[in-house]
Length: 73
Length: 192
Image (tube, each protein chain N blue to C red):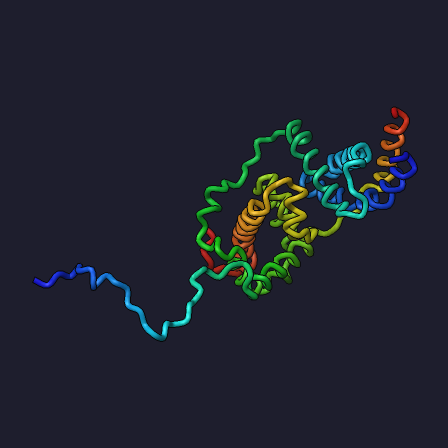
């Protein structure tokens, strides 16, 4: 009886003209659509999380705190 | 370092970033008064540790590192509120994780950029963990490079990449729901 699992059947075929290799990794974050979406996502965040002015006296308080540190040195 | 040199370096390279540090901490705390207090403390630490800062390098990332440490190690311990945090295991299994921005394509095409999303974005931010929120702010609001985020967060680069990806997916999922309910914009992607 013909042995379907003979070693000759398992041997890989070799051809003189192999097909070109095709990348089989999934399309990652580097494809251009994805990069465009990242850019647009950043625009959305920036438009909706706008810069807030700090309290007017914050810079003065920071400098005051630094002066306290210097005084302790 | 002499005191004049220290003072000059502090004023010229660190203090100029106080507004962006305040805004970062405002987004982390959600509270202007707490953000102002933490900003003061960040710069006080910056002054005390200025010998560790190399002049002419990335002052903003260095300051964000101090601010992030203060927020997590000091502020969070004082104000532990038991907020619901995103389950990262759930995010990990999301179908579109290979392309984290896939879910945003539909929203972008449907004109989501023209709408006001300030409230849902703030709400969605609160559902992120502190670490995720800090990273997405640095990456997408302040345009830090991944390497800078890794320095500021003191995390391996690959971890930064994966957390950034998951954070974006989590935000997009929240925003998709809002866009559908309020503007009828349907997202066809399965975000988990």
